Each structure stands twice: as structure tokens, then as C-alpha cells.
Length: 528
Image (cartoon, rainbow, N blue to C red; front, side, top):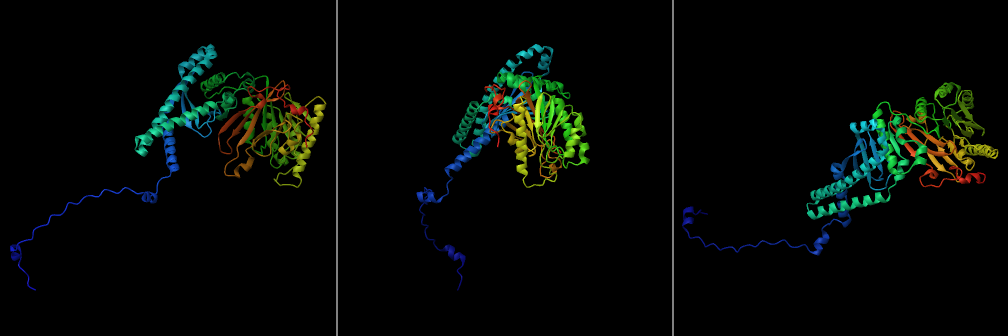
């Protein structure tokens, strides 16, 4: 086929162009109901959960960044802050000494008070003019009131700003951001209302101190004055501030604990299990708390052999009389060795002994199981030993010389003396427990003052070292309060002290005619 030259093609006439009709852009069709049904939509609860998460996180960030106020409280400069919390309460951080925690309220916010430093001028003014201490409580009350008001205003601004800013960043819609800020303000107001409704000014009576052990007695205070002289929360708060001032002023030579002469102090220890560190701890507590008598509810040894007896020699130098009862790791060899030591009072067979103004009676553990074996009839033997002790306690009461404190090793034996004595002390289970039994006897089970001895390394975490200070009224010889002391186990250096009051000694409680002794003790039927 011949090709046509391009010159000929260019010479031929071209057909006219037909103009195209203009095309119209189609608008996107609106989704129909069927289309919406097929498209996954976020559920309402998911949107609500997301909004709540934004509000909580934004409010927390706001409080963290700007939600604190610096407030001078008496001679100290403090920083007050609100923090999200599950349990609420108040935490007073006294760096470097430790922290004091109070169950002051139940709400999703906690009040943190950080003691930053002492003001030299105000502290020196108190030293130069001691008469100003009488007005310190009013000054502290005013400072706390002003600080709390400032903190409330700043916290409102902080949570609203934080939640609004985070809502704007997440949703990019002003309306959603303002809704987040309003919800944050509502949550804070609800938390404040809950805290106000559950406010417990008496929480200062039962504080928990954690930090340096040597400062704890001065911070926790004296049992009898707290029980009998408690007037208003402000006075006790002022007293706390004064004690903290003394602690900072003394620095390395912390102030000595000044006991009330009308109070007897009993140090309850148990289950030492050949831990030599226990003697140093006990000696330190005896000195700090001016302990009148030490009560050991058994298992001082591990195998009860004569070769272990030398471990007991430091008892004579602890600085207080030592009342002891045999545990299931202590043998009769151990008991005879202790019976021959000066300043040691061995309890057994229900025989009563008066030591430091208190009458004690106890019975040794009927079991001797240094290998931790379980023998047939062990529970029955404990109940029988407890019944023998209960019979001796009833005889003492009938003779007009009632026993103030009974001591056994195992709690199962202690339960048999219910109704025959106001207080029974025990150990054995290596953790602390307290209960008032059916007929009015209070059972106090001590933890291991030896941190379970070598058993401390058997588990993942070492067992804590536990002991307690019991405060007795010198006249009525009834328990007024007790401090539970817990030290970190093997290799740890933490310490926590918490104050506890019997219900009859709580502010507003009606004291019984017998000075706090549960009334059922005088008329209870014989225990089972």
C-alpha cells in the first residue's frame, strides 16, 4: 500500500471541530440510612469514656503543673498540693525525716503538705520568746485556713485549664474543650464536697509515721495526753508543728521522747527466731520510748538447744524487765536458762507475777516443734493449755488479785481465755492482728520481731520486723493506746509507726465505770 505524502495531507481541507458540551461536577451524594448503617460508628459509651479520660488526664496535668501553693505555716515554709488518689487522706512530708499520713477524709483527692524548710527568723523568734508558743496554734490555724482557700482557687483554675487545653488538643473543637473543662470543674467540686462530708478531725489521733525511726516518738506524741486532753484538731496540729520545729532544730541529735508519768509502756515482741539484730532494735525502743517492761510471747529461739542459750545473754542489758513465755521453738532447756537470768520473769502454768505495776500470767506452748512439723492433736493441746490458763485467771480474780495481761504463744490458746482477762498477748503467726473477742477480751497478736529469722530469705521479699508499744493507764492498768512499729526486713531500712486507739478511748466515747475494761468480763460465762 502506497503512503500518502504529508504535504498532500496538509493541503486537504480539515473537518470543522464540534464543540463539547461543558461537563458538570457531581456533588457528593448524601449518605443514606442504609450507608450509615454499614459504616462503623463510635458507641456512646466509648465517646463518654474518652471524654472522661481526657478530663481526668487534663485535670491531673493541670494540678501537677500549677496546682500548688506555698504557704507559711507557723515557723515553716510549706507547699500544699492536691493529688488524685483512690483513698484520699492527708500526707505531711517532712523531708528528710519521713512522712505522716492521716485518714482525714475519703475522696478521690489527697492533700499533700510538703514541709520545705524552717524560716530562720520566725524560728529564732520562737526560741527567743517562748511565750509565743501559746499563740502558735491560732497562728497555725489561720495559716492553714488561708492556704487551703488559696489552694482551692488555684486547683479550680488548674483543673479547668488543664482539661480544656487537653480537650482542645484532642478534639479540636471549642465546644468539646469547654465541655471537658466544665466536667473537670464539676468533678473537683464533687470531690471537695465528698471530702468535706467525710472530714474526720479525729484522724490526727491515729497517724501513721514512716521514715527515720528515731524521730517517730516525738511526731506521734504521747498516748495519754492524746486520749484525755484532746480538745480540737487545731491544737493537735499546732503541737505537731511544734514537734517538727524541734526535730529540725535538733538535726542529728533528735529530741528525746518525754513520757507521761501516769502511763505505763509495754514493749511487745515475739518470734525473734535467733535474729541478733532484734536486740539492738529492742534496746533502741526501750531507750526512746522509756519502756517500763518488755513482754516476749515466745519463739525466741529456733531449735531450743543448749548451744543457742548464749544468744539470750543480751536480755540482761536491755534496760527493762523481761517477761517471757515459751513458744513451740523454745525448749524447757531454754526456759530453765532464762529462769536463771536476772531481770527475767518466766510465765508458765498460769502463775501470776507483778512486774512494773502490771500483773501478768501465762502458760508455755504445749508443743515443741523446732522442725516445724505438724503433730496429731496439736490444736486440741493448745485449747487445753488455754483452758488451764483461763482456770488460773478465774482463781486470781476470785482471790481479789485479777490479772491485767495474759500471755501465750499461739492465738488458738489465747481464745480460750476470752472473758477472764482484759488483754491477752500472743504471737506465732508472724503477722500482726487485733480483735475484741466475743466476751470482751482484746487479743493482740504480734508479728515477728526477728523478721522470721533465717526464714526471711525463703520468700521473694523479706518479712518485716514488727513490734508494738502498748500504753497502759497506771491507775486502772487498762490499755489506752498502742503504736504498731514496722521496720523493713533483711537489707531494708524503712520504718513505719501507726497509732491505734481502743473504741472506748475514742473522742466522744462514754468511758466504762471500770476504766475502759469491757463490761462482759465480769459476767461472761465460762469460755468453751
